[in-house]
Length: 190
Ligand code: GAR
Image (cartoon, rainbow, N blue to C red; front, top):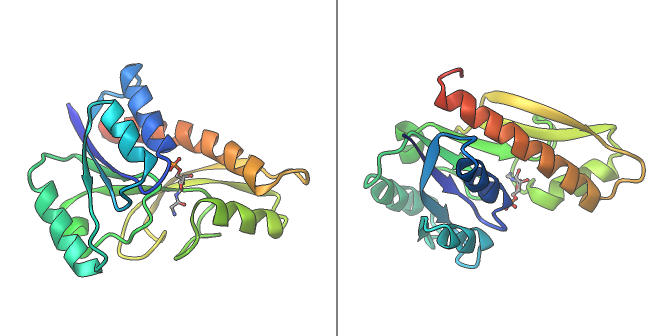
């Protein structure tokens, strides 16, 4: 079995998409742990509702967070860590031990970097009147949104789109793309 740990800071609809795909047997994997830096993240409720273990990391310091997480994760056998709307930087201890991927709601390198997450991205894309946006799945390295790109999906931005409608379009494309990438990783096609 392929063992996943999912990190999420907010709503957790991406986590839910992974859980649903596993339940539908579209992914031969299991989620052993959900980690959040936000004790109020709805992602934690989704995990508990699905009998998945959770860990909330409240340490604000980058180095100590890295050490604490690496101690917690050492109790698990992990094939892949998925950042699914996780907003904190990943430290060197985790980067050195694990394969980590992130999903980002823009066509990187556009609209990436510190502070560019969730609705902030869609607002910036709509304000700039871009013709296209999309989602990027990439390996995680020591810089925000700079790791090697695995795959991108484009969506059209219509003049009538708001950040809200764009977010819905990008998020549905993003979830399909993520499940596809996870399947490719599971089957060693990447
Ligand atoms: C997703 O669209 C993900 O790409 C984005 O946050 C959303 C999480 O939604 N991640 C980033 O912006 C990271 N820079 P969710 O909490 O409903 O899964």
